[in-house]
Length: 429
Image (cartoon, rainbow, N blue to C red; front, top):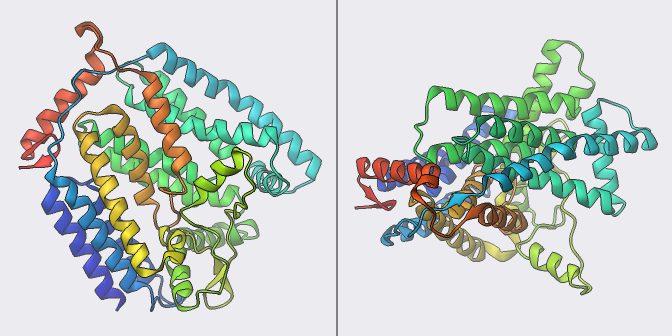
């Protein structure tokens, strides 16, 4: 059953590519990611328990997501009426704020880890400190630095998109964002940043080259390998010698990449095995709480579930975990809706709309990471933050031709690339 499911997902990915002629078309990404994830489960052998119950849902989910995205192909979206020009000074100020925040974040974490008396590497200490502080209620500094770390990602995305004006600024913004996310001990932020920059690179007319793929692969190796060691994940904290460390890193990579799909299969079979603390209403609950209403916001961290023999446990985080209480029909309906939303923003992005480019870059990262988390409904605050910063950074009124160089070149590049591919405004003719 597992090989058949892999084949179905792979065929869906190929069919969507033939339909759109775009590698980053949402269903191509979604189906490819889930096909690759199941291949990893297959190759892992008896490392995991066998997936028996959720395979049908995985295939149906990919199918209805494809239908939702394909529905957007009937629209013929035009490019923006006027060319938006980025406020370079404002963007530089945003980058400067990110850079200045790094040493303050480091000082706060260093003082906090000393007080709690944790042991381990500085990065493992930082992670323990952040988790402990969150469990204790957070506080002003926790909220401030967590938001600054999240703020650094869209700032780095904007600086990367405007690299034609200043490559040094883009490099500084990316390094500062990486530093902040490493300091708070999170790997998801790093993965999001890398995937968003890759998406922006491709959608702004650049070809997918060996160099860009090498950067993507090396970044993934750093996040899954090096970060697992410095954060003392699993047996990497106790392993001695290169071979034992390499084996521990491999096991952690399996858990991080494919464990969620195996864990969710157990939830489909035994719905009450762990509490379902993820749902699509998290943001409305957070908003109601911020407005003073008494609402109970479930914790983000779910309980561990048994994923394989020999006592293997791990997280059940996947996109599907947030929809499990909606039932099969509800889950498929949500996925079709997400397919339509992603398809809409993808079409606007390749038509030259700047805010949509940044929003779809975030959605692309959510699709790529859907095997380990839900970044759409639960990621609404991040999507709103990205859209808002992009809107603020760009002067949306018409500007003189002398100041239209950056986005004007990109729009021309979109049109040229799309015309060669048989598209007009991102829609297949």
